[in-house]
Image 1 (cartoon, rainbow, N blue to C red):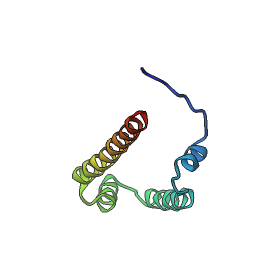
Image 2: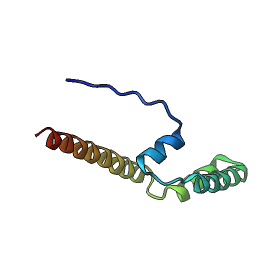
Image 3: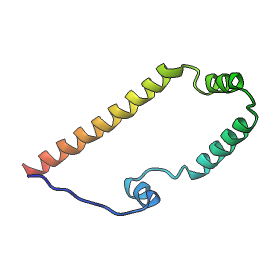
Length: 89
């Protein structure tokens, strides 16, 4: 049996429902700092240096982070599936 549930809510409501922290203030600071950094860039070489300082491991670091997030999501899905099977027994 397949059941689809559609939930219509804002990102803030979803975050609260899932018990995730509100990081909007930290995000605002991050966006402000990124905006300042990008305004100070006047050449492609400066932009490349800025990118290197922000992601020192480059593509490898981004791939590592992606794998971490995907692994976390997969583990969460397995846990949810396992708990629903237990409740059926």
